[in-house]
Image (cartoon, rainbow, N blue to C red; front, side, top):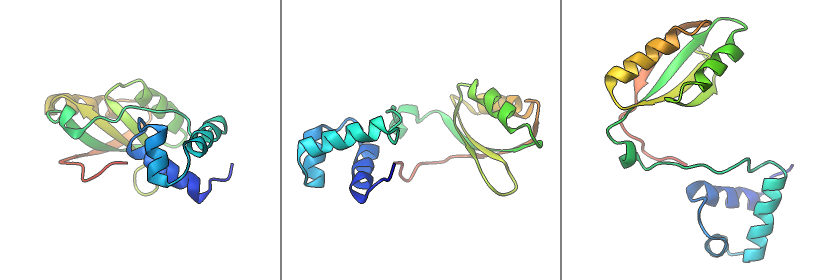
Length: 143
């Protein structure tokens, strides 16, 4: 499906607040509520909008440790490693990347000790060659 500039504007508003009312979105985009509703329905039907999720405010997990965990995977092991990481609830996202590492995971744990344990568990997954972690100090913005 081709995404128009109007679709992009709508998606930007939904990324900021997926709970915004149709009327509020229509006011922000200067279009009718019917236009907003039909565009959202079309984007959902076509699979462009795959679902909605909860995004927590940084303060909600202020005491939690967040880290980007960079992972190098042995050749042809990426799918198995990704499946193992998917089963770890502390791993919030996983991205395949270019460069010296193959994957970047976002890990969230209540303490440094638990983050240490998480990175050890990730390193012990069959097919993981090495890991490197960077603790996140703060989020400047999220969309």
